[in-house]
Amino acid sequence: MTTLSATDVVKSFSEGRQEIAVLHGVSLSVERGEIVALEGPSGSGKTTFLSILGCILTPTSGSVVIDGQRVDKMSSGRLAEVRKRSIGFVFQQYNLFPSLTARENVEYALNIKGMRGQAARQAAIAALEIVELGDRLDFLPRDLSGGQKQRVAIARAVASRPPILLADEPTANLDSQVGLQIMELFRNTAKQAEQGLVIVTHDPNVRRFADRVVRIRDGRLS
Image (tube, rainbow, N blue to C red; front, side, top):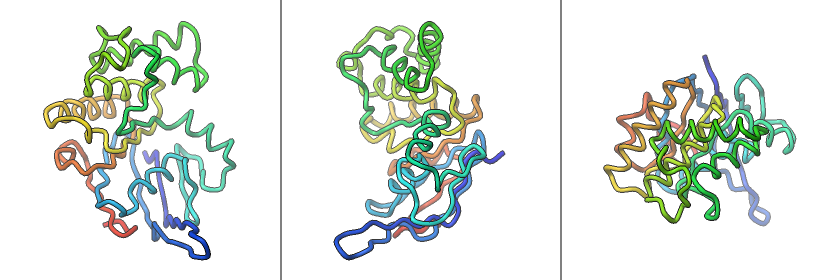
């Protein structure tokens, strides 16, 4: 079952009087439980495309369907609701709140999505246990290794069990061995929960965990 679909996506940005085209008719579909690695050189348009898939940017033209809903013409308010309900993000820089513990970082993300109180706390703990951080619940980010911080970021993304996971260079700041462990966790989590996962990456080791590798160059997929 398709959980994410982009068709003929074009994205342009204005620079003064010029229109700079970044994406040129890009199409991609992702099934539930499918892991897609999106590779490409810097400036190829992959982060812009991921931002459109994540409802952060809207395309200039083309269509995007997320979990059965067409989103490319939605207002910013409705897009925010789609992001909260349907998408989990994992970023290269972790984006953890330094003053919150591992559990609190995950719990706060659940609060934003509308889950509160004991239910949010239990879901946060369960997600951290999935990524093998059950013994680090009360640790602040400064007391965690890079790999552990990324595990918290994964737990935060999967805690509400969204149908779509989007990851931007999730292994870039990790050594190769830790990066492989993180990808193993990613794969297991996505497969078990039947979540569609798109990973923007320069890391060739990510390929072995992907069901499909898609390359983008000069704003076009191959």
